[in-house]
Image (cartoon, rainbow, N blue to C red; front, side, top):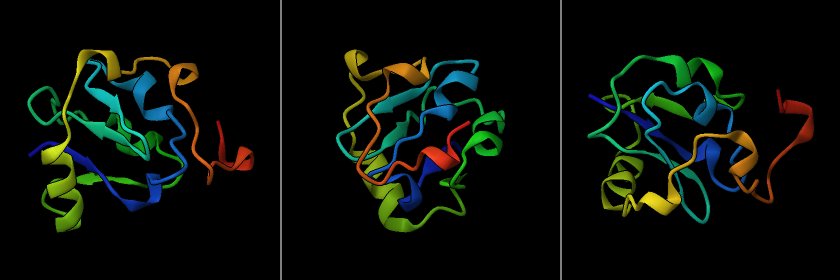
Length: 98
């Protein structure tokens, strides 16, 4: 099962994950980053890179975040491949940034 971004990403959006994804399956929403489950190849690179441990397997994700991810509209203009293209949220902490 694809990975899911959970609550620790909400209002921070560090963006480290988008740069390590070999298939560019990350998309930016207003409050967090999302993983497109049809594009994710379960490589685990993003999970290890996230400074707030927000990414889990779909099986370990909180049900409300699995549902939130499933309802997200994955539009091409929201795809992110570079950290500098991610707009950090209000809870972003420079001391945790890589």
